[in-house]
Image (cartoon, rainbow, N blue to C red; front, side, top):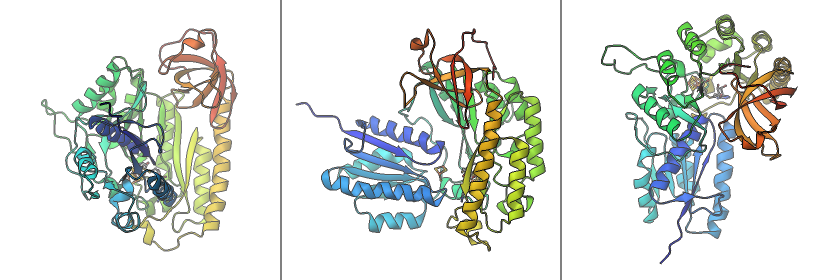
Length: 460
Ligand code: SAH
Ligand code: SF4
Ligand code: F3S
């Protein structure tokens, strides 16, 4: 008798860590017999990989879980699961336990590898809630059902030890653990063999990679710079990215490694958070605005054409107008290629949530609008300098809006849309193409196929 294969859907919110975890979750589900579902209604199991970094991220997940109640009423056999950062918080688990009876499965960020066993219990009719408060050692060898063939995320560290006072990540992702260099390299090699051309090394603070790892046989220790140099030698990989960097821990040796490794892309995502030293101190960031600007200068000097992007927050408790002006000053001085801007969101259990002088909503809104305006003007200015220039782009595929247009990214991580030339039809995801920038915009560059030979190495 033919039995139709059951289908699974895994929906990730939040950062690249969750996107990567979603691939492991789907890989584990495939291992126990599930196929991929194209949408919620066609799925027999739907799992949400949640984020709690800001209140609106939590609200989005709660909204999606709410929609599942209706869907499950139509399709009672469906299994609904929730995992990820949100459910590491006790109060969220209580809410799900008591007020969302249609959720069948809850697991956390530290026990993803237990999914096959947990699913077996759910399939047998049990409601399973299993979350571990602490991480044990790194689990290697889990399967992954990758979102793309030509590019992939590779974890290098898990967790975070920094305890920035606003941030919930160290509480929900546990203490920092580095993967062994051999394990990272084995994953990159395997990806390269399966057709991957670009890897992004992931960690909350990639610059602290290697801390706590045992010495190698020769007694040497591995740091982030060593890892970059090693990954740079893997055949088949054309581009190496890394995120996120912590400005406090970005050493000259690491800058030098980026400069000297030909595959490592000249893009630095360096979250600034705030420009006022008083606020940076209250945030426990461990650097001053001068040190930040100095780092940007050293990067620009060592890595010509480097693009620098950042994260900035407004409305931290006690932030005055003068503090905010200091943030604007650094945006002008650092000339960011792009910035993600956030309104401070108090997170239960963090130190900043109980600090005095929480800023009123109206003040936060006013500041974020002014910040976005400046950030956009700066990005437009930076991108304008690329007008008429030829850049090397890695093809991602046809643009979502217009399939006759290709989309891809420069080494500096700028999104490019262009009309392919004569051989355009033959371009596949992961291929490198030369594109002339005709119309730079704030967030994307628009261009045309450039009839020049592809030069090895850096172009933009
Ligand atoms: N480990 C990374 C990023 C973690 S979260 C780093 O240190 O850069 C990504 C961004 O979310 C942060 O850079 C910060 O700008 C923002 N963020 C974190 N907690 C926040 C909060 N409570 N409210 C608003 N934004 C926050
Ligand atoms: Fe959060 Fe700071 Fe760690 Fe980044 S470095 S995850 S902002 S605590
Ligand atoms: Fe969110 Fe967790 Fe990432 S809280 S930002 S998904 S580490």
